Amino acid sequence: MFSLTKRQAVILLGVVLLLVACWLLYQYFHQPQPVTVESQQLAETPAGVDLAAKNAHIDMLQSQLNEAAQQIAELKNKPPDTIIQTVPVEVIKTVEVERQKSGANFAIVTDPKQPDKQVDLKEVEKLPTETSVTLNQYNVFAYKKVIRGVNVYPDWSEVVRGNFKIDEVTADVSRRITKDGKYIGVVAGYDFKHDHAKAGLRYLF
Image (cartoon, rainbow, N blue to C red; front, side):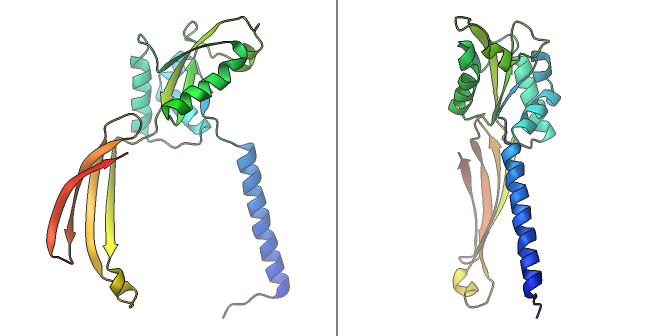
């Protein structure tokens, strides 16, 4: 049997505590930034969406990046998700409130008057209080177009006796039907306990 001396145990505990402390410090100094300011031109590209996703600590597939960028580009001549009209000191707060209200994973903010330039929110905050600020906000939802799943249901009455026996197995495929992550799909499987196949619909929200 593997055992540690008292000194080895203390060293191991110290290493574990050090790793935990380093991880906590990293999380503290690298907190997600759910709002990214970009030029309109950059926001319309997969690279621009990817930058905003990385700032929010969210991983997206290339297909998701392409889709989001295309949607932003298509909105160029239409009203964006949100048009921010507020006073300078309230810009950052207003953007985050609107993002949370929509349920989006992150948001991209652009300046409609200067599509090739990135607005500096810190500089905006320094503007005179009576200044009216208007920016475009694009809320991005990081949901896959299609999700698949496999479900296995053991017979727990047998498992507790040390015999692994499966009661039922199902598989499902669902397609996203809304931007905020609602899905509808089909599920099929086999019930070994009652010896019959089954199929149905699945709605995820």
